[in-house]
Image 1 (cartoon, rainbow, N blue to C red):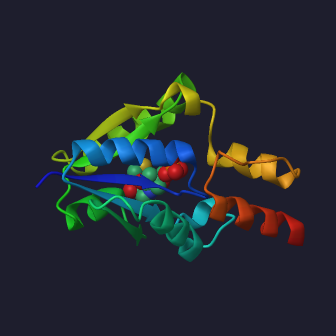
Image 2 (cartoon, protein in one colour):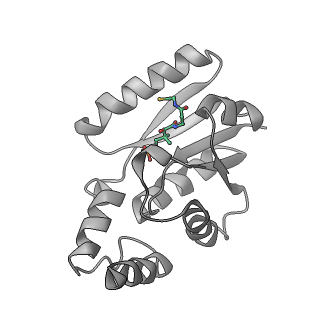
Length: 160
Ligand code: PNS
C-alpha cells in the first residue's frame, strides 16, 4: 500500500491544489490531504472550514482522505504510514522555500521522501493568496476555486 501525503494550509483550496491531488491519486494507492493548523500564518478560514471545503471537493475521489494536523509533517506522515510527501511546484520562486522544507523533513526523517509535482501550466499563476486578494477587491474568482469557496469568500469580504 503506497500512501502519499499532500500537505498544505489550503487557505482556501484552489483548483490548482485539486489538480495536484487528482494527479497524485492516480499514482498512489491512497492520498491523505494534511491540512495544517498553521496558527503562525493567521489563516482567513478556520481549520474546520478549510477541511470541509477540501472534503466536499474530493468526495468523488475514492482513495483520497482529508485530515487536519497540528504536528510536524513527518510525524503526520508516519502516523499514516506514508513514505512520500507530495508538493506542487509552480515557479522557480516556489523552489527555495520548498527545497528548504524538503531538506528539513529529510533531516527529521530520512525514510520519508518529498516528491515535487509540477503544476499544470494553466494553473501556474494560481495561489490561495492571489485568490484572497482578488476576492478582497470584489474581483471574480470563478473557475479558480469551487463554488462553495467562491461563495464563502464573497461572504467573508462582504462582512468586512
Ligand atoms: O500551504 P503551505 O504553506 O505550502 O504548507 C506548508 C506546510 C503546512 C506543508 C508546512 O508549513 C508544514 O509542513 N508544517 C508542519 C510543521 C513542520 O513539519 N515543519 C517542519 C518542516 S519545514
